[in-house]
Each structure stands twice: as C-alpha cells, then as structure tokens.
Image (tube, helix red, strand yellow):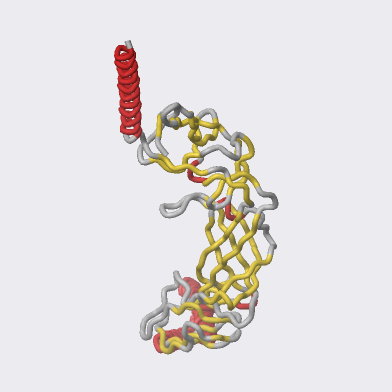
Amino acid sequence: MEIGNVLRDRRKRNIRIAASLFFGLMLLVTFFSNTLQQLTYPKVQTVKPVFQQLNHVIKGEGTLTPRAIEKVYDNSGWKVALIEAEVGDEVKKGQRLLTLDTTEARNELLDAEVQYKKNQLQLETMQSAYQTAYKAAVHDQSSDANLLQARVNMEHLKLDMQIQERKLRIMREALSKQQFVVAPKGGIVTEVNADLGIPTDPRQPVVQIADLSQGFGWTLAVANEQVRGLKVGEEVELYLNGNRQHLIRATVADIKDAEATETTAAGKQLSFHVTATKLKGGEAVGIHWERKSGLAMATVPKEIVDSDAQGHFVYIVEERRGPLDNQFTIRKRYVTLGEADEQNQAILDGLMEDDKVMTESNEPVNEGDLVRM
C-alpha cells in the first residue's frame, strides 16, 4: 500500500510539473509572440504638456538706409565734363555735383545770335524799302499792292524775331543755370549715375543724396507670433555691424501685414526709425528682442498641432495595462488653442498634465492604431 501511495504521489507531482511547464511555455510563447507583434507597430515618441511662459523673440539682420532720399535729375542733354562728387561724400546745399560740357550749347547760342543779327539787318533793309515804296504810292496808286506786301513781310519777320528772342533768352538761362548740377540740400551722396563724355539719362536720377536730418530706417519680415506685445512707438535696441555690444536706440515706426513670398510665409513687416548721429547709411544692423507672456500655460510643440473640419487636435497615446504587457493606442484629442510663440502652442482646454502627446512617429498613424513607445 505504501508503495502504491508513493507512486500515486509521484505521478501527481509529475503531472503538476508537466502542467506548470506547459503553462509556463505557453506564457513564454505568448509573451514572445506579443513582443514580436509589437515590433511591427509604429514607434512613437511623446511629451507631456509643459507649463511655462511663452517667449516671443524677434531676430534678424539687415541694412540701415536713409529714410529720405533726394533724387537729382539733369535734363540738359549735355555731356558730363567733370564728376565732382562720389558715393559717400558729404555735400552741402548748392555744392557742385557735376560740371557739364557746354561747348555745343554755346556754339548753338552763337549761331542763334548771328541769325538774329542777320534778321535785324534784313528788317532794316525792309523798313528802308517800305519807306521808298510809301513815297512812291503817294503819286502812283498802282503801288499800293507793293506797299501792302512790303508791310506784311516786315510783320512776319518781326514775329520770327520775337520767337528768336525767347529762344535766345532760354538758351542763355540754360547756360547760366544748367552748366553745373548742384545739390538741392545737404546730405550724403548714395548714388552717382554719370560717366565722363556721355550725356546723362534724364529718366533716372543722376545723383541721389540721403537727407540725414530725416534719420534712418530698416524693415524686417517676421512671423505673426513673434510680434506679440510689440507696439508702434515702442523703443528697442539694435546692434551695429554684428557687434552685440554696440547698441543704438530705434523706434518701432510701423507694424503691417506682409504677404507670403517664395521664401517666406505670410507674417508681419516691422519698420524701425533710427535717429542716431554719426551714421551715414549702409551700416549692418540687427535685433535680438525677447518678451515673455504674463502667465504660465500648458504648452506643446507648435508643429504637432493639426486641424480638420471639427477643429484643432493633437494625437495622444493611451496606455492599457494587460496581464503580460501594456498596449499603447493612438487617440485624437480636440483642444482649444491660446497664444503661441515661435516654438510652442498654448493649450487652453483639452489636455491633462499627465497626457502623453505624440510628437514623432516612424510611420503614419491614425486614431485607433496600436503603437510602441
């Protein structure tokens, strides 16, 4: 009997061991099966909402330009004899910029004066002939026709001479006033469009002068989020020639909408007004302006916020605990947006502080998809 009991106990123990091994093996197979299956799921990365202040930053560089440019034209058509101003020169009102070659104009004036004197002599001859014809007409009525013709010829010549007198006056004034191109006001020469021995183009300014008394300007295109809190009339600091320690004061002169271009998205165009002395224009300027929002808010990276017909949303990863392993599922969560800065988007409603918000995925995902972390 004892031997029978021992055999039964041994058989039961073997069955229990075999069962344990079987179920253990099944669990192991299931675990590895789940693990292998999970390796086929898209791999995602997540972040939790961060409570922080938004940081609005304006950065950029450009070139300082005079706000007022005086354009000087030359309509004479005369050749340039001497260029007396160069780019960068500081000039005063009335100072010579160009000297023009008046040789042809003076010759034309001399020819016109000679022609006028010839007409004077011709008029004197006609007047003498008219007096002779008038005396003859007193005794001979048939000479009336000749007398009338002589008077008409004199009147025509007098009218021609009046036209010549006006032309001579204009030519003399041009020689007196247009021999030199002068600065209409003081400033810095920013452009010279003239070549020796060639007439200037009347359609474009021959010289451009920066009126330094009007100060300098600079424009910068930025994203809409960057200008939050910046107002027209506010003073900011610009740095010169890449030196962050060399600062000048500037005023925000204008903030207006800027259309999208091939290289930039639609945003805002900022205009700055600078009145600092000892500037000539053309200096390199830059800005690094920062301002934080007043309250800390729940934020997520701006690029992960998407939208559809129902509104704005983010993808979150829900975790479901299982006996062997946890499962992670993609869910769409609609949110209410607040302000944004260059990198972060404030979320006013729709997220909890422990929510895992998806930021990246190695494959496209949709709501309900299983993923791995």
